Amino acid sequence: MADLPVGRQARTTCLPAGRLKIVYTLVMYYVYSISSVKKSYIYIGISDNPLRRIEQHNKGYNRTTKPYIPFKIILLEKYKNRKEARKREIYLKSGTGKEYLKNLK
Image (tube, rainbow, N blue to C red; front, side, top):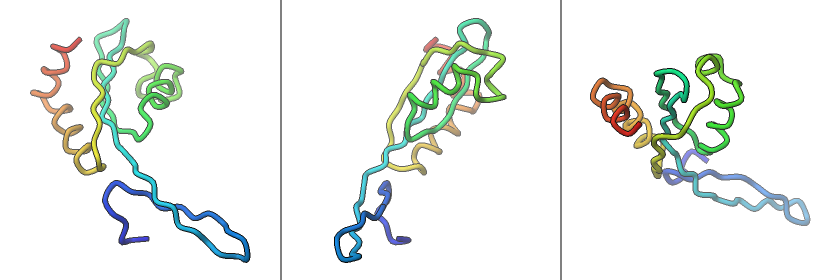
């Protein structure tokens, strides 16, 4: 499974007589940015399921963001692979990127 195409995930399903079938699914990564409604705080992250992840932030499951709940989404971008998403996340966490996000609020 080391030779998987970028952005794909493999899983196996069982067939009759002990045979296995490999199923490939496309995995998309999202860069998201959320802003606290009550305080001046912006959080940037990566996820393959951003709505679930943002819900976790709003429910207080994360120690880092818990003091700042509730949150609103200010940016959600889709990428084909984790490498591209991580590159964008690093930019958004820079000084220039933070200024860009502050203007979106």
